[in-house]
Length: 288
Image (cartoon, rainbow, N blue to C red; front, side, top):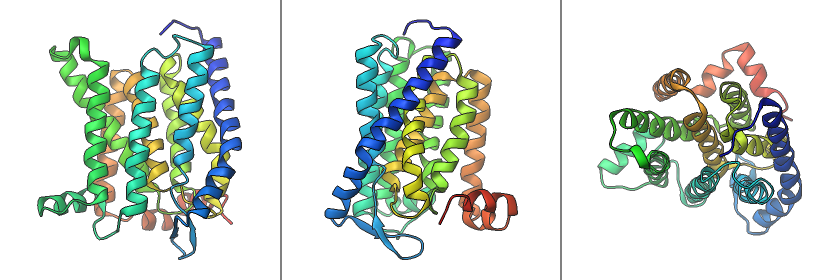
C-alpha cells in the first residue's frame, strides 16, 4: 500500500462511497426482481412474505468496486482488497445458506453450539464456525511473516475475535426493518473516525455507499437483506477495525463486542429498544 495524505484519503473515501452508491443503483432492482421470480421469500416480523437474501447486493458491489479500485489505483489496498472480497464472498454464501435452508429451532450462539454438542449441525452453527475460521484465516494471512512472535500471537487473538464477533453483532440486530443497517452506519462512522488516514477504510466506504442506497427498501419492509447482508456488513466492520485501529481502540472495541454479546444472550434487544423512548425513536425512524 502506498502512503497518502488526508486530502487524498478524503477524495478516495468519497470516490468509494459514490462508487458503492452507483453500482447499487444499477444492480439492486434486477437482483430484487431475480429473487422475486425465484420465489425466494420469507415472512418478515409482521408475517408478510418478502424477498430474502437481498444483501447479496453488497457482495456484488464489493467485487465490482474493488475491481475498479485495482484498475484505477493499483497498490492502494495491496493484498487486503483481495482478502476482503474473498471474506465477503464466503460470509455472503454462509448467510445465504442460513436464509434459504435454515430454521429457527436454535437461536443465538449458545443455542447453535448446544445443538452442535448434541451432534446436530444447524445452518446458524455452520455460519458461526465458518465465520470464526474465516476470521482466523484473514488474521493469519495478515501476520504470516511474524506469526510465531509473541506480539503477533496477541494480535491474532484480538483481531480474530473482533472480526468474528462483529459479524455476529450485526446479525443480532437484524430483527426489524432497517435496524441492522442503522447499526452498521453508526458503527461505521465511529470506525472511520478511529481509522482515518489508513487505506484499509476503502472497503468500508464502498459498502457504506451501497447500504445507503439499499436501506430504503429494507426500512419500508419491501425486502430483507437477511443473514446474507448482515454477515457482509459485519465482516466489513470487523476487518476495518482489525486492520486500521490502533491497539487501544481495538481492545476497547473488543470489550464492547464481548459485553454486547453477553447482554443479548440474556436480554431481548428488541424489548430493550422498545422500552427506551430515544432508542425506539431511532429504531422506528424511516419505516413506513
